[in-house]
Image (tube, rainbow, N blue to C red; front, side, top):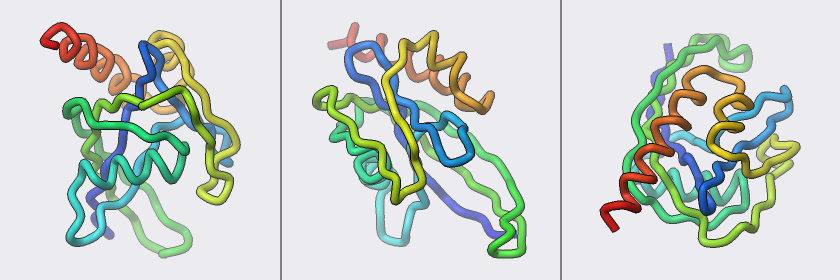
Length: 140
């Protein structure tokens, strides 16, 4: 099995959260593999920019998820452990990257995003990240 450390962002603009629609019509959060020598926060920001075209800053950690799948191209199982960050977009601009495999992207209310996200881990992560965002704002 191939084990990979990844990082991603739950990106908010005001109170809305950003989801991407991939080529399989799944609504997902931006994420990517952490290459040697890179920090997880740095990777989260880079993947959000590359996949969604969003300039965003890390607010706080959001949590961790993991999943496994079989890679037909690698002909082996893959395990992804993902560190997630609550992120704040600098503005509402976004541009989903077709070259990264995304057809569409948009901001949803936290409630809509929980319903729209394809995977249950992402649904729970959005709920958790939204609570952390509100908490961070209260602390100022």
